[in-house]
Length: 392
Ligand SMILES: [Zn+2]
Picture 1 (tube, rainbow, N blue to C red):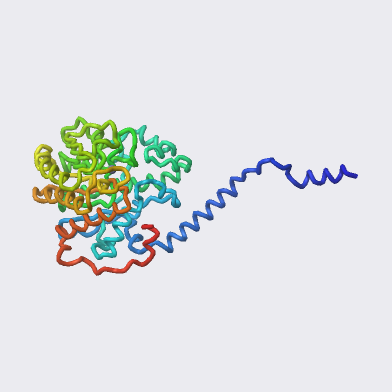
Picture 2 (picture 1 turned 30 degrees about the vertical axis):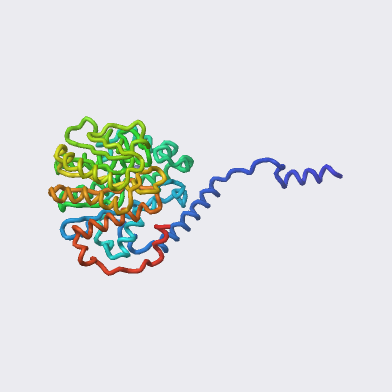
C-alpha cells in the first residue's frame, strides 16, 4: 500500500536539495521589464533642459568669445551602482542644470558634441587598448570600479564607455570652438591618466591628446600645450604626448599621492600637502607666463581638476573655492591676454562640493568674457523637480 503513494510523490515534486533549473528566458524577460520600467521613469522624469542637449548641434557663442559644450550623454548610469565610485558622476549634470536654472544658459546656447570616433581614438590609443575595453573586468580596473567587473560588457559600453566617448568628443568640439572664438568650456573631459595602451584612475580615453591630434590632423594647429592643475599629476597626458616637440605638458600637482611613480611632463611642479591658495597661486603666477613662452602653443588645454579643494578625500592640497576660481582665472586670463585659444576641461574632484567650485569658475568666465557680468543672459527659473534624477 505504501509503494504506490511514494511513486506518486516522486513524480509530482522535485527532490529536496536539487538546485532549481536556470531559466534564461525568464531572466531576460525580467531584465526587459526592468529596463522598460527604467526607460519609462527616465522619460517622465527627464527635464526638458536635458532632453534638448541630446542631439549633436551648434549652440550660441557668448559675446562672440565663450562657447559651452555639453551633452546629456555625458551622464553615466548603471542603475545606481555608479554611486559606489568616489568620483561624483553627477558633477557634469549638476553644473549644467545649475547654470540653467540660474539663467546663465539655456539648452539652445550649448554646443552638443558627437561622440569621438574610433578613427580619432586611434590617433592616440592602440588597437590592443580598444580591444581590452571589450572585457568588463579590465574596464573595471581602469575605472577603479570593482562593481563593473561582473556587469555584461554591452551594458558597461552603453552605460559608461559611451559617456566617455561623448565627453571626449566634447573636448574635440571645444578645441575647434576655442580656435574660432577664444574660450571654450567642456562641462566634462580632462581624463589625464589615460595612456595609449591602458586606462587608469577613472580615465579611459585621453581626451586632450586626442583633441590635439585631431586639430593637428585637420591642420588647424601646429603646436599645443596642456596646463594640468588637477591635484594628481597628468601622467597619462605626459605619456601620450612624450617625445613630441609639437606639444608641451605642464603639470602642477601634489607630490606624495597617486600616481607614484610620476611620469615626466615638460614641466612638473610638485607641491606639498597643505600648500593652500596663497602659495599655489604665487607659484603658478611665477611659472605660467614663462611656460607658455617656452611652449609657443597655438592652443591651450586647461585641465581644471578641483580635487585641490580642502577636504577632498583623495588629496590634501587645501585650496578654497575662491583659490580654485582664481587659479582657473589666472590661466584663462593669461591666454585671453595673449589672444591664445583656451579650452577648459573639468578633470577630477571627489568632495561633495567639487561641482560647486567648478560651477563658480565657469560662471566667472561667462561673466568676464561672455557678457554676462552686467546682465544675466536669461531669466532665472525655479527647478522643475525633475532635475533630481540627474543630481541626486
Ligand atoms: Zn585628480
